[in-house]
Image: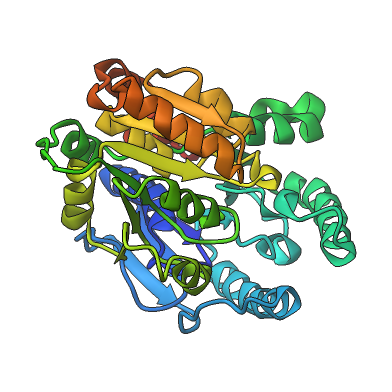
Length: 372
């Protein structure tokens, strides 16, 4: 029986990690591969199979906010998990990013072993150029990536920005680049497509996802004052949660729901009339996987941002893309959506496109063409 070792790094507590990993593991089990997942913490995937085993290398902790302390913490953890992964001598080793320090310790494997890099985020590209330390780290990891990328038999990317980035580096050897697009699982898509509508006395606009620096939910909180007749719901957790709660402490129309299980999230989606998301400008290469969930509901979306997400949303209808971190523009867009009753429509076209193009179970086939 062949064996696949998957090096994750970040804890499986994090939904984006689980969502990308589950289709890979399910497909491996379907093909009768033994799967070893190397990660942190103690959480397992919601998959019952004798073919899966776990290696938990260190306890899950919230990463330090300080940039340098976080870097030291991740370097040490990357060393531990890479060392453990290579000790297995599996037929296939999948090393995942965004745990970017994994690149420091990866090496070329000898045939017949195959090593695959799965990119969910090019995190070093999000570092700020006006910060000397972050700019230096960015340039360092660009060089590391260019040198280490040749250690892999294949590189899978989660969106077209990453795909183009890798192809440009590999030049004539770009055939090894695979598009395994972020998206949504079949089960979650079915749940969202078949939502039962709730009828509320007040219009509800919701943000559902990570609460971090990239999302800068202070924009969302600030605009709530201008719409006392609306309810603003924030679902999720993250390192900026206390800052955002402090900004919102005197605003009675903002509701913090915390981290919720899937059935509870479905209830929030059912109640919501408008769905909101945002990414700051230096994260323009990312495509938030949460947007695939939003689009699967068919409901109206307001997105603040540029780059990959903007390009993707332009393929769909029933949404507006505005500048990120712009309270004034967000105010005018919410007012426009309500005045014209845009929020009352459900886009079946969007749902059909998600089903056709962005189901994870379909995308993972590209990855297994290399593996098999």
